[in-house]
Image (cartoon, rainbow over all chains, first blue to last red; front, side, top):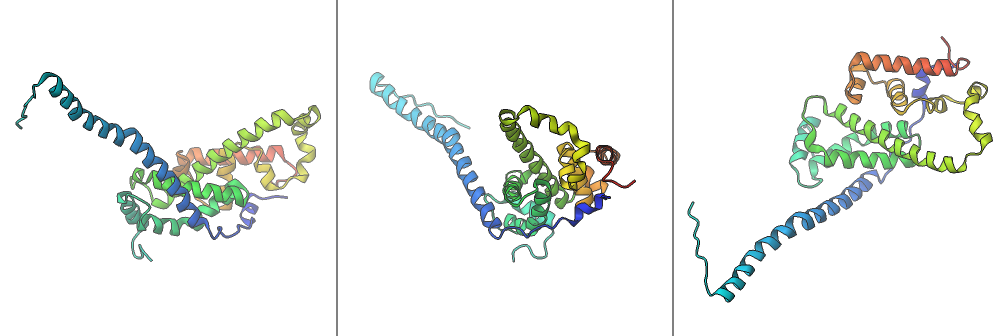
Length: 74
Length: 185
């Protein structure tokens, strides 16, 4: 006859020696992917937007000869 | 070793402030490695899947480290993450296996599960547990193999203590009904 307590009798082997290393390798791979996503989805568009504004302003100045001097006072 | 003298909860707060897997998180991995491995091995059933699950548990612990609110013991929170990870992995594994079996099953093989009573004597306890749902199986394993109390189980499964007791009792009854010859009253 079986008892549920017999479940505790299952022998558990020790954790693999490289478990710690494997965790950090997997984590590093995931962090690289997350950082790349961050770079392509957030950082690069933000930088592109930032640089587009002066470039557009430069072309506008070249074509119209006028330069907007709007100084924002806080 | 880093973290000596600090509680798990203190290290958890510290690790939430770290940008990468810093010393506090490494110390937590070191502390919980053995216990997480034990839970994963019991729930996954073999070393290869358990190793994969244990790695996944620590990755999730790192990615969700900011979600620990300190309402429960850190250890219970870790075991809860380990449990949910193993259940997810087992479900995806059984879905994969089911897809493969659908292709491979012959009419003769399909009749076998109905003939449970005849084969019951040949099954051992671990195989019997496989006939339960993933949650019921996990509940029985954590209760009887790992010796968790109902209050801890309730927190890990997100249930009330009474609901937990009821589910354990139902799962036991199911097994006793399915395999009457194997269980003493």
